[in-house]
Image (cartoon, rainbow, N blue to C red; front, side):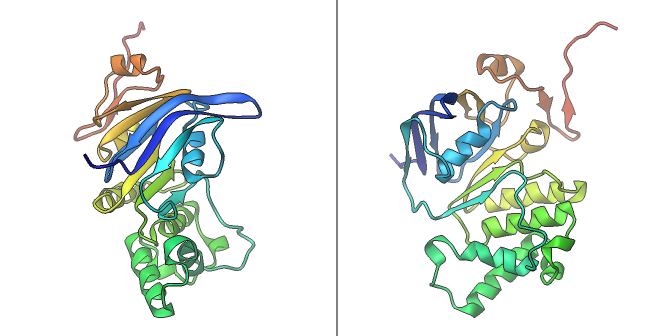
Length: 247
């Protein structure tokens, strides 16, 4: 039987003695596309920080069955210092300065990889622009390019559609669908209606974690999973399903 890419086993995590996640277990399979949903404060971002090694669990363990350096990460609201004189191209290239590619690429190869990645996210024409002059959507495209430029095995995204314009939002998820052919993706989002068209499975996180091996989930399942979010369905036109209510 093939090993999962990452195994999370009986994980407890928190801050300053306050437990945020308790007894969380999850096996992340190769080329899965997991949509992570749940209420604010439920522990979604904490789970990502544990995966990225940015904080240590209180107990439990995380086992990686690949090189841990081959993880791409787009944190929530990530951005470089707008006052620092750095261009779009330089920001994206900095994604090659860590992990398994460090010191192994010649300048020409790095430039080509950066160019190809900028083209993927529609930022090639703005490669020389200082990041301080970018719109919110342009900046998010740039930071996404930085996260994927090294062709990671696992791509971790914390609400990547924040500050993204409506046109690029659809392009973003289509791009993620294409990237999922070669990398595993974990995506935190509050917009289940949008992401359900693209994800393969769902993890409901609200202090604990329930993994749902489908991209469709019912209101009753959400209740069982202790995941208090709005039910949103998708089809030709994504729409919310509103509960019965009195006038």
